[in-house]
Image (cartoon, rainbow, N blue to C red; front, side):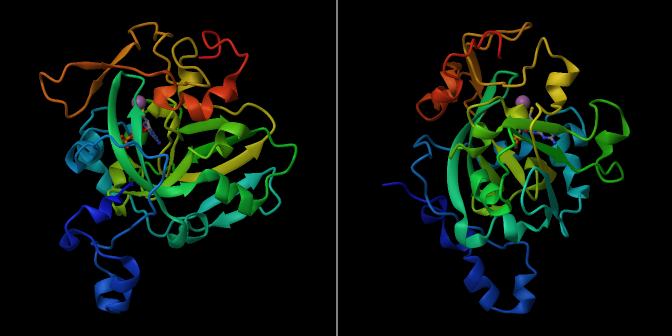
Length: 298
Ligand SMILES: Nc1nc2c(c(=O)[nH]1)N[C@H]1C(S)=C(S)[C@@H](COP(=O)(O)O)O[C@H]1N2
Ligand SMILES: [Mo]
């Protein structure tokens, strides 16, 4: 049986949001608002990284390129109010709120491996909804073949955007069948709490079989299109970062091996572990790439 994280966390450290709200308006303003999600069979049994690791070792270039920059500077980002523009080849384009995209009753817990292209990894207990659920609500038109995502551009609050480190705003994209795969989620929380800013509050993509850079943070636009969209890292250096970016121990980055990874939190003597094809999610996703040469479509 799979336990929800909240089942094994002391009651004092989390609270059910509904009973919390019932406790009164004054309390409802508290930042300690809990967020629970139904357990999922897609979750790994492996033990998640500590909240400290997950929130202090990050990549979020909008706040700087150092691993500790997001923890230091992301609190400057205003995440409420927030809306997401969903447009392009959809029946019901418009501006959607978080409650439309990830209603609390639909939330699931997904404990996933995260493998960064830089060859480190973590295990993170996300809270979120399948991306397919919101795509179903807005009605994807038959002509659509890709989904593109865009992060907020707000240099006043995202200090890294004051410099042209990347071609801002950060953008990423998936093929429609990848977007519809049940493993692909939009996360609004982790460890039964709303997403910390450094992890991409209030809404970020999680695609666990792809290198971490595909899992775009702080999303403000989702567009359905029939042409392969712009993708930030692919555009910056196509010989190093492909559009697909599937985790693949057999296809090395031109400047380093992808055969092994350093598990964050494993300690100085933790050693390296072998990287798994599709980050261990081959059973769910290998069929998406049947017949494709993965050394060319990296
Ligand atoms: N907008 C945006 N999204 C982003 C990034 C970024 O710099 N900006 N970094 C990516 C990379 S390289 C990784 S490995 C993951 C890291 O997610 P985490 O910090 O929540 O572990 O976020 C991805 N999403
Ligand atoms: Mo990454």
